[in-house]
Amino acid sequence: MINAEALAYMRQRSLAGPVVTKMAEHPARHFPDEPSWLRHLERLGITALTVTPDPVKIATEGAVWGSIKAHGLLPDTVILSDDAGQFAVDRHALCWVHAERLVHRLDTFTDWQHAAQQFLRALIWFSDRALSVNLLSQVAGIEALAANRPAGRRGQARSRRRRALGAT
Image 1: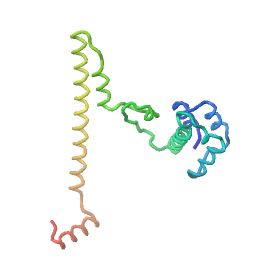
Image 2: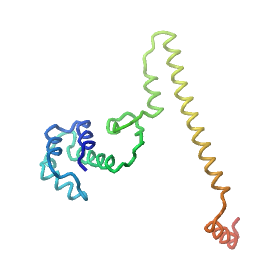
Image 3: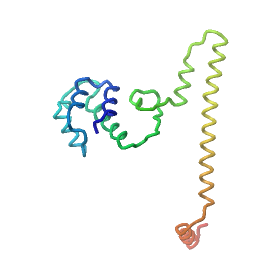
Image 4: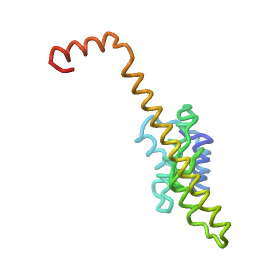
């Protein structure tokens, strides 16, 4: 789907201005399948371009992103990445390990700066461990709920089959 989100994605990925303009000015906005999309790109002369970044790839990614946004999919999603440019879409965040690497690489010239750097690194890893423990406790809680819930019809039938087969 070609919409404002798709065009913004294409511009952000440095798709050539004339290519974005062709996409924006063409009346076709919706494409039911990949062959119709590729025919559209061919009619616009985009498939014949041999430049970097690959215009077909960027235009296709943009159209997919436009469709995702138009359909209201992933509304509160945050893309977590290693700061690679291809993941810098919509709301994105740097994962803990990669954030810590940036702090680790900071040059420190005084004892105070070094202590501050080490403190920040410790906070990052503390936060990572706290989030991991929280996640694990949530998973354990969900598993406990699932184990203690009433069996219901399906569960009762499964239990009878297991008993008949000699399983516990």
